[in-house]
Every structure is written in structure tokens, then in C-alpha cells.
Length: 391
Image (cartoon, rainbow, N blue to C red; front, side, top):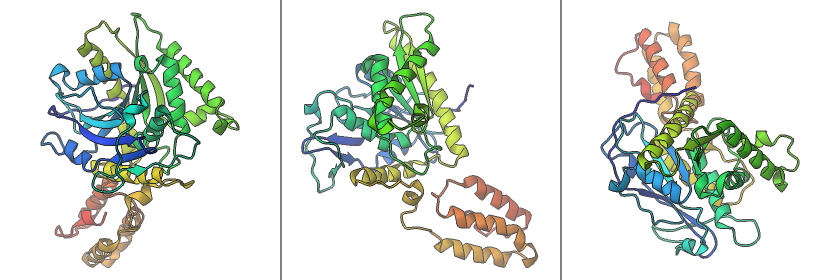
């Protein structure tokens, strides 16, 4: 099935640092504040729309294609960062009601010396020590998988792995297994699962997508079935699809093909999955705004840095001070004073919904606000009543 998205024009701009990892004195992580504001409020597009975050995992192939997506040699893409995740905003297309942010993950470096970054624990550039219960020093791959799985994936619509950089299909299966093993339990599991796109270059004019995808899934199943955490699991497939919504192999033209053509093929595959993920999240009222994403990122880092067997709650994280009902009572009182008592019963279902929804992020239930506004208009409620504040 084909999913369509309208797009608006974005300007080319530099990256905004999102996450930095250090292993100098044990694993530590830093979240760079205001990263979303830097990327969203640049004077282009509709900054009120929730952004899509698409994570890129790879090395040389990933960097070359991402640079092409960002404008080629005229872009400001930096090939030299390590142990970091940068956000780049999709440029130069007729785009979008919503911003698309590419999360360029350089966490899967194979040289530990590159992650030996000084990590101050105090001050404005402080790092947080990450909980690591396994014995010994964590490998770069496993530490990167933990960060990607627990912090980046819940906020992303698509995770894009580049097989040419990661040891082929077998290497991708190994990384996906680490990703699945590192998952955290949270209360939006079914609603915000990302799609996985595996970009595979092929020399063949008629590649067999089904065969390659089946091989990938069998390798992933085989690796997971040997993991101690899943020994008693009856269905490995259920484990896989409890973490990701789908896994797609997406063939790219051969490496000798012009880079812009290869980047266009990649973009088309990413757009299809991104739009599908957004439709699902919109239907589930879990399409996060940039402010939600920034707040949730900090809460997820706190959760990862403090060992806990509990389930992470997006609902609780979105309302850290509990029910925000201070303004709700005032507006309900105004509403009832404005309505004839004979029609109060018609407003009761909407007021009941308001009591439930005060535990959810503001703006995540705008459809109900519209329905309430239309209903109260039919009941001839005075126009000066600010109905939107009830929700």
C-alpha cells in the first residue's frame, strides 16, 4: 500500500548536536538542550507540526547518502564526528506540513579511542553516568544499541540501517538483535514502534527482495533464539515485532550509479514508511510535537541512567506534576454557567473526557477539542468562552 504525504520547502541548514557518548571513565551520555528548537524554528515550514525523526546507522555509505540527501557537496555535512548523534533537517524539497529530521548516529564506531571524550559531571555541559550492569567495559556496538533502542527508537518513525557499512545482512541482523535485546518496557509499546529499513546495494537489475528479506529475518530469529533472555520465549517473531513495527529490505542502485539517484531511491523508501508511521501515531494520539520529543528524551535518559525494573511511562513523563486541573475547574464552572441547565446532560460526556485527558500531553487530543467546540457552538454557547482551554 502506498502512503502519501504533502511536503513544503525547507532551507538547507547545519546540524544540531543531539546526543554525545563518552566511555573515558565508564559510559556516560549528554543530551544537548534546545536541539529541537534549533532545528524547528528556522523560519521555514510549519513549526507547529510534529516532526518525524529518521535514524541513520552506518559508516561510509550512510555518510555519502545522507550528504546527498542534504544537498550534496554544497551541504554543510560533516564527515568527521564520532560517538555522537546529530540532527539534520531535510532540505530543499517541496515539503511538508511537517519537518523531517535525520538523526545521524555515529555511535557504532569500532575504535574505542574515539569515544574517550572528557565527560564532566557538573556544569552546563555535564554528562550523566549510564547504568551498566553487565560485567566489564561495554563494547561500542552494544552501548550504541542501548542508546538507540531506549532513547532514539521510541521517538523515531524509521530506523535506517546500511548493510554495506555493517557487514552485510548478517551484520545488520546482529545489530538488530542487540537493539531488541536492549529494549525497555514502556506504556506506548504498540503505538510508537518504528519501522526498520535496511538499505542494501545490489549489482543485479532484478533483485529478489523477498528472498533477501527472508534471509534477514531468519538470521535475526536465529541470533535471538540463542540469547539467554529469550530461551523460554515460544515465539521469537512476537519478540521482534514487539519492538519494531516492520522490517523492510530496500535495494539501492549499484554503487557506480550517480549518488543523487541512489539518494532519491532511498528517500522514496523512507518517505513511505515515515508517512505510514505518522498515520498510525496520529490515529493513536501519539504523534509527539517537538516539545514533547525534547521532554521525553530527557526523561528517557534519566530512566536509562537510573537502574530500574519498572516500566517507563510516557503518560507520567508528559505530566510530571500529575493532573493539571487548575484551569479546568474554572472553565467547567464558566461552561455550566453559560449553558441552560436543561442541556447540561449533553455536555457531560465531553466533560468526562476532559477529566481523563488532563493526564495526557497538551495538544495530543485536538480532534476531541474540535468536536467539543462544534457541539457547544450548536448549543449556542457564548463566543467569548474559551473552549480550547478546557482540553
